[in-house]
Image (cartoon, rainbow, N blue to C red):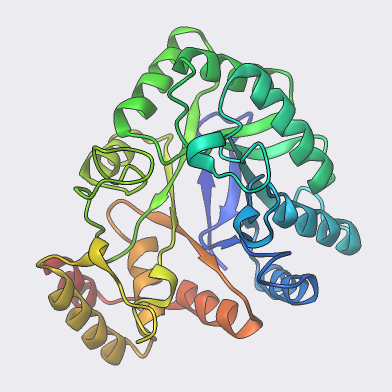
Amino acid sequence: MKYRTIGGDPATRREVSVLSLGAMLFGTATDEKTAFAVLDRYVEAGGTFVDTSDNYAYWFTGSVGGESETVLGNWRRSRGIGDEVVVATKLGAAPLAPGTGYVDNAEGLSAAAIRSAIEGSKARLGVERLDVLYAHIPDPKVELAETVREFGALVREGQVGLLGVSNHWAWQVERARAIARAEGLAGYEVLQYQHSYLRHRTDLPSQLSPDGELGTADGNLLSMVRAEPDLALVAYSPLLSGGYVRDDKPLGAGHDHGSRDARLAALREVAKSSGGTVNQVVLAWMMGADVPAIPLVGASSVAQIEESLGAVELELTADERARLDAV
């Protein structure tokens, strides 16, 4: 395994594995026994960065979420896992009632909602302190300053280590960071966005915004990470839910643009020359890119996490990387 540091403050920064494991479907689509096996193999290989959320996975059960955090808490206790594994969770997008969703009835990012949400997450995970806490989606009903101040207070109180943000516009991220700097508070240092070798279109309206797909790592976000040394990018859905390699998982309208076919052809060429699978080439390219990302991979079997782990040791040559970058 290889490792990198997230966070700029020596007091709170953490060393994590360059490959993160997503636990979204643990406890719902993936049963606890299988989830434990995947987690065990990931940690055995040196993995130290696991991701979840307080709303995972409400859409499978009709609940308001929490199953994933519960499985992770059970696993931590059964294996005696402590600070050696960094667990990141999110708040703000859990529906407030069964049968509702994050668009129309989310818990939100008010000070009161944040305080309530972290208590639930800590209880399910079985921890007194959250390693990494993300603001999951924007809350248009709450001023950014209120959220920033409450997140900063949690770090000051020792209830949270590092702060992150997901699925916000780049201007919201920078404005929130500016407020935190001005008030001497901890700010967002970990950004979690959809990012992969195939770039997602940003012009399509989404459920969260008529202005486009705000959860995608576009040029504005990537340039921010390039310019700010304290920022780390965690990339969710790096393998496009199987879209690179499975005919039954079409890429859809989000990847229907001019560079798609040429980039897919480049991936296949580099997979052949490097000896890796297409998925492994995608992950290796991301980890070693000019703006490196920490791929956040899901796995519903030990075989799936095994393939992703193989990407960590896949060394692309300068020519192979140039071939991928040139398209």
